[in-house]
Length: 292
Ligand code: SF4
Image (cartoon, rainbow, N blue to C red; front, side):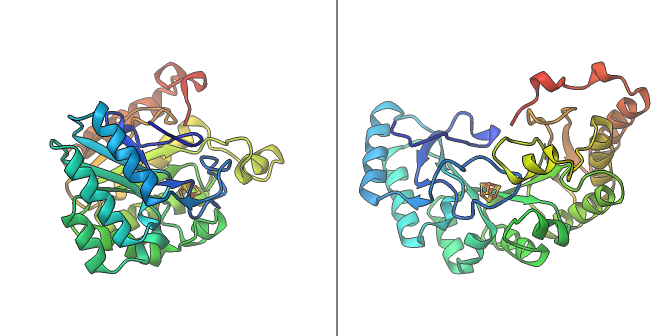
């Protein structure tokens, strides 16, 4: 199909038809993110989007899943999104899932009624980059939303019945006390937001980003692999909500861990403890195989 620039999608959307609705991210300011640095944000014209859907219909008639690219498709006006969803479901008879990344401010720009209408029209899954629950850290990394706004955005999506996946970043605060604060506040915001999925990624400095420059200048210290695991363990220990699917298989992570909290909590913590006590590098994903 027709794409502009690099295309990103969550791991779980690997078998989705990727429909590029916006170019880039409406926020594009997070200090750690290099995904859309090469793009100036704009919404594609409806005629282009509909033409793409028509073309895709010739190739992927049996598509069951669609992911709306790029970084924040929910920023599109609600009426336009509804038109896109109608066209998708009319073109792909087996379609059962439409997912999108969602920015907190773009989500807050929609009313509960608009989000409900989007869910009813078939927007089934949203991926929100929570990154951390630490209010000061959210500001420091220029996320564009503090704790309260992030929580409100997540809750609006959950209340609209949209299957929510929250993404958090291990190592975002650096080592020591900031890491502890980050872990505790992250568990807290997840407990309050109640997404269905929690995906953890590990901070990986990307050339061209503010964070990369901070690391180069010695202004930001990355966690070592075992500090990263200890931070992840602290998040597990402090998650109290039930039936939360934790997805820790992202390629940036040192140790792939998955499971459902609370059901698998002891097993997940025991696995991390084993690696922490052995300090066996061989049990970690080597840096050469890590990536974003
Ligand atoms: S909102 Fe998401 S895509 Fe946009 S700059 Fe931040 S991390 Fe990157």
